[in-house]
Image 1 (cartoon, protein in one colour):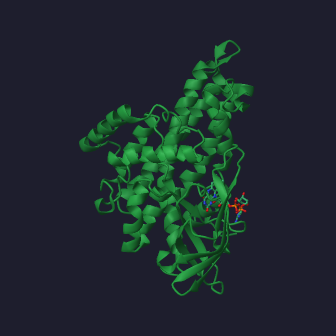
Image 2: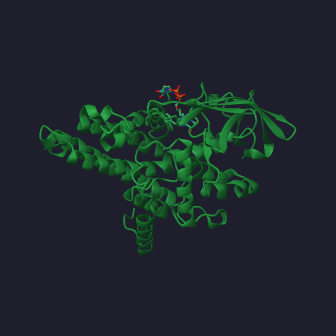
Image 3: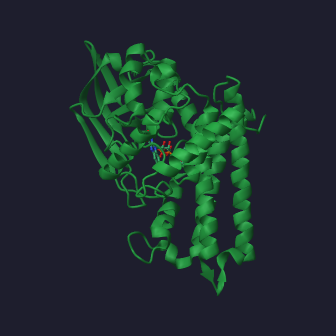
Length: 397
Ligand SMILES: Cc1cc2nc3c(=O)[nH]c(=O)nc-3n(C[C@H](O)[C@H](O)[C@H](O)COP(=O)(O)OP(=O)(O)OC[C@H]3O[C@@H](n4cnc5c(N)ncnc54)[C@H](O)[C@@H]3O)c2cc1C
């Protein structure tokens, strides 16, 4: 593994750093940390930001040029995210489209699907959501029951999805539906692109512990979707979904570690300025140890990310070992939230917009949000199963 950046990568870093220093809007700076981002007005503001990034050539950096990307390597992508974190710039809002659906369409989509969707993903002209989970299909995703029945050249869809992040502001969704109920459960599934404005779709926001309604229930009642929107082959959607999930767990993990660093830097600043018994919290030896542990953990995550990155640069597909990073990240994220609560004390429970909420209530939000880290994108228990069975070769039971 080579830890040095090439002169060309270093010059790309300098270019991005200068652009961000001049262009991050004041109202968005520092807001990517843990502020609410699910309201329609905020999403529209973030769409504008993604468009500005795209015009500067900073969205889809590792996407091929023929699809509107920059045609650079994933290294430039990582450098960009590092610099965005440094500049406290929010990440592109169309994350599911960019990180999950885009690579999936490049691998399994038709030419027509790529031409129709990829450019609009890059410009945030169309925001995407991921319609996989159902009330009885979360960890056991292949248990999904949403039915799609072919009627001429359209599929008629009936069923319910849940925890669909951003569905209330999404223009499109990538869904898993059951097209052959008689087949073994992993076999009769199809991956389908659905226009969220299709008649028969109802989106009901669910309010989370944070007070924000980032995710939703999605009801599909006789929703008619063109058969041309199937990605890959009918009844072979499970393989397509595995591509999507591998990108979610592996590539996104590198970005997660970068946002963890942003939070850690804020935590250090917070500990330095928060007084406890007449001293800065940062002078408390026990808290110092805890912050040092978090710093070591963040560094381990970075190195593990580099290990995955090396594999990807050598042309390997993301593998099950990516689960290590997601599992570890979620633990560190929750530990960090707990240490922040300890630094702040009882004030940590005060939420924005109270003037008494430290750091504009962002820690209160962060601590509650972190409870979901061990659930989304694969629960910790499931990731341990994957690591045990598929990486360590332990017996299934
Ligand atoms: C913030 C957030 C955003 C999300 N966004 C989306 C989204 O955009 N799109 C989407 O499709 N989904 C989304 N999800 C859903 C997420 O993927 C599921 O919550 C997750 O897969 C777990 O499924 P479940 O909630 O049904 O829990 P269950 O699968 O019912 O699990 C309940 C508990 O049992 C444990 N368990 C289950 N099976 C086993 C087993 N075999 N061995 C050991 N333990 C087990 C689990 O670890 C968990 O603790 C989101 C979730 C969160 C928290």
